[in-house]
Amino acid sequence: MALLEVRHLRVEFPTRWTTLVALDDVSLDIAAGEVLGVVGESGAGKSMTGSAVLRLLPSPGRIAAGEIRLDGRRIDDLSDGAMRKVRGRQIGAIFQDPLTSLNPLFTIGDQIEETILTHLDVGPAEAKRRAVELLREVGIPAPEQRIAAYPHQLSGGMRQRVVIALALCAAPKLIIADEPTTALDVSIQAQIIAVLKQTCRQHGTAVMLITHDMGVIAEAADRVAVMYAGRVVEIGPVAEVIRRPRHPYTRGLMAAIPRLRAERQRMSQIPGSMPSLAAIPPGCAFNPRCGSAIEACRRTVPSLCGTDHQAACLLVDEAA
Image (cartoon, rainbow, N blue to C red; front, top):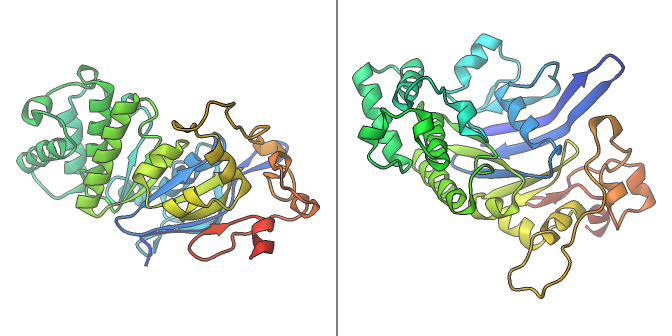
């Protein structure tokens, strides 16, 4: 049984003139201890999916249809008060910029201990002990001293480690990591991904890893969901999707990755750009940018087909 189940999720943004659809019929699962990568260009719906699971949609966004279940319990229809108890305790979050996640006026120890005391039935002494242990787990050197530091006294990589500790401190079942390495240089990115994988494996925590970087996906994820214009267009085991991508959009993403050993040549790119919510084309949303599109692609919205490795493409459906 999956820990997180998202079924036919639809997120809308009502405006004065029309209703914009940000997510359309999104379905995915994450098992306990599994890392699901969610990848796509800016505007594909990756972060919106994570925000919908956390129930932190920007106003006036709303979940218009579908279900979200955590460990068998439906959470998309919970009251705001009940959902606040789920966030932090059962679902942790890691965001792109650690400075926006940490309060500059409090030490990192104060912030971790407060979160532990809020969600767990322990005293101040035990909360401090757990905070030091968590900082040690995520690779903070000399945690007994660093616990008294303020966020501005730490490097970007160290701050992101603190944010990972914050996400883990209440022992959640699921962590949603939204672009957790984007603001960091490449060497620190690798360290943060290694820390995230190791600590989540130790705790048996499931992870939704949201990123635009296929390299991060290849390194960290067990499975990958590729999103385009608010829909999942391909999902499957990460090695299978990378080696044998079925959807033209996934093939385009893979072709745009530079190859170190290849002969020097012009970078491959996908023509055009992601459509805005107000101008999503009929049929398959990718058809204006797809070199393989047929007439049916302009009329029919394809559904995911396949078993473990699924793709939403009429050409894949015909080949099957």
